[in-house]
Amino acid sequence: MAKPLVFEKPLGMRDILPESLAKHRKLESVLRGSIEKWGYEEITTPSLEYFDTVGAACVTLEGRMFKLLDKQGHTVILRPEMTAPIARVVSSLYKHVPLPIRLYYQANVFRAQEKEAGRPAEFFQTGVELIGEASVDGDAEAIALAVACLQAAQVPSFKIAIGHVDFIDGLLDEIVKDPQIHTQFRAYLHDRDYVGYRQLVESLELSDDERRRLHALMHLRGGKSKIAEAHELTINGKARKAVQTIASLWEALEAYGVTDHLLLDFNLFSNFNYYTGTIFEGYSADLGSPLLGGGRYDTLLEQFGRPAPATGFAINMDRLNQVTTLTTTRTEQRLVIAYAPDRREEALRQAQAARQTGRVVITRLLTDGDVTESLSNQAQDEIMILTAEEGEV
Image (cartoon, rainbow, N blue to C red; front, side):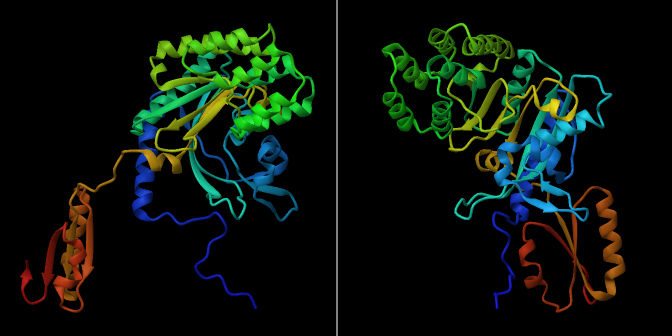
């Protein structure tokens, strides 16, 4: 007989205790205030979505989805991300709302983990979606807002890396014709396996110039000067157009005054299949994994019947919690009213009156007469004791 599960939780699930949750809620509040200043409105969507709609739009994550059957036999999923659900809303409930539409969310998402992964299967995101803006100014707004969010969250040192999905694909198209080799290159770049990447380059029959261009891709990470270097590596095709887009984007970001927090990374690669243009990731100096990720997805809404360009990003709140310098130390002194049974009415009346003035009040019934021991964990609070014999102390 299997041992009953008493304290165990499903793989990847966790409890969040009050002290951690207080910090999480404060971060949410700070980010909400920052995002709303840019004209974004909050939206929430169901935790459960149909696989045939939202799930199909997130095909990259299919192997990590929690799937269930409802009573009608339909396959439903716990949402693995929020961009596709919002695309569904904009194409249905918001189909008559004129573009552009600015929405943001603070929600939990679910991605199943392998037993050895050690990562949460449920985690929290704060994100924004700018729908209906096709220009680089839309991308610049999303990136500048991401900078503003990390600044508001008091992340002491961070950078946002910017790339373009067409640059890598376009450069490979110019040099390597075999689509299977393309897949291998993309896998190495996604995993940042640069040793494997270089070995693959050396194994191919290429001209010296082609080999030079592929090796040079590894060095296209830095400031504005990398735009000219990337331009030199490309022919007048998809990769060249991607470089021109990044150049225009950088000009817009210079107007925002945020380029000190940015760097260009022309070998940046996203595993989400719906990104179509500019992509970006945010990193903290004290954390190896990305704090945030986002980019342009101009074809996703077509799947829901309302074609529209769009861009956005999502912040991983669990990772943000690890690097923020925001604190949640309680500064307001609470009032603790301890009372004997025969003074209940008086004590609770005073508690209600104090709460109406905005104070935090905790009431305690004294039953054993040991006032000191009973209230020892409230040493930092203001204490009022109402006993039957001695009156108010």
